[in-house]
Length: 258
Image (cartoon, rainbow, N blue to C red; front, side):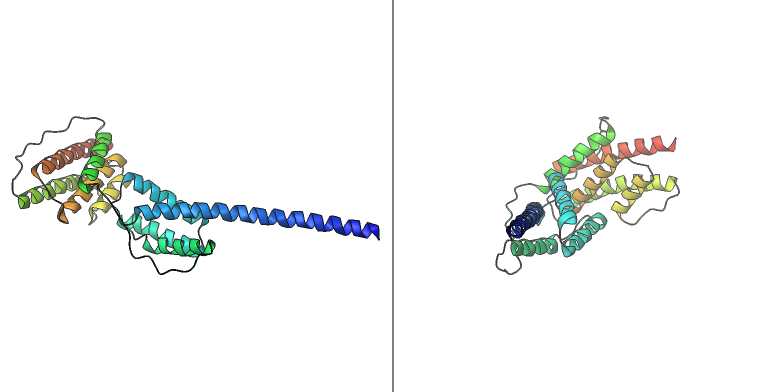
């Protein structure tokens, strides 16, 4: 009888240890997953409704990686769609994924259900033109390997309409150089600037740094077309960067044609 009592006591103790161990591991996994998804939510929330920068781009990449690893099935599906949309269109709506994360995290924390979020507070003092110009400068420097900038040989027009048109023409000259390089390889010219740049990179005609510079110039053109103020000083900077980028494109194409 005593043996049975002792044996049952041991069995209960061992069983308790096993159960406690399993529960502890489950709790640790749940806590780790919760921390990662909370971090992903915060990083995605910081990116939403803001101008994209290199730092925000890296934060978005990191957040999406965490969601793809630890998210629910619906969150993974939304993150996958977000990645594909951003890759193809260079823009995507993080709202659906943020809302799914918000709902899931509140449920994990046993908080009451709340209506979907509709408001973001954004206090952003960054000038998108200045940020974009700084990024393009860095990429042009990388793509030209510190080569001197060709001189800006035209007088800057004073009227804003003329400024805008001159800027657009400078960008089209850059795209024309890329089109000429593709044509020399017998490659068809895609309809959009992004697709043309991607084809040039795929064909080995230009370096990734040069492609990044062209992408930046395309974004700055888009800002101007959407109403971003353009001044003679900004146009002069833009034209100088276009000249430097065209120089890099010609050097890259020449090297690969040898």
